[in-house]
Length: 98
Image (cartoon, rainbow, N blue to C red; front, side, top):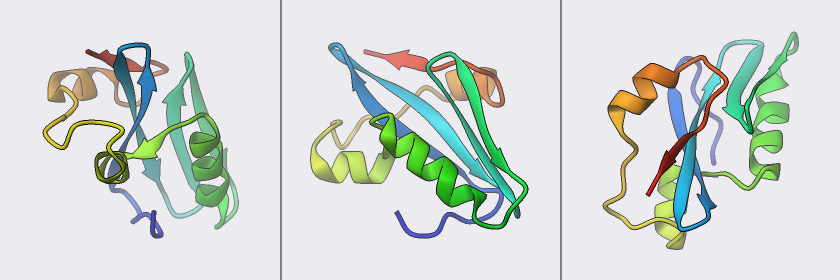
């Protein structure tokens, strides 16, 4: 993944059993965060915090959605539920998709 843009929401996905888990990654000027494994992970207070957050997310097995599609991890037509994303944004929850 290239440098994420400030304020843009990126979708990340990983394999979970027979389905997938997805989460959102968001970067601010000096912080970044995501929800995974029942916790909200925030890295903050320095300009490179997004790198730390992104490394933690990848370390948990997540790939950015376009990369996951390109690698064949998820089907090219797969998209997370928009309703699920709206309900979980900013909360410590991972949506499970079949």
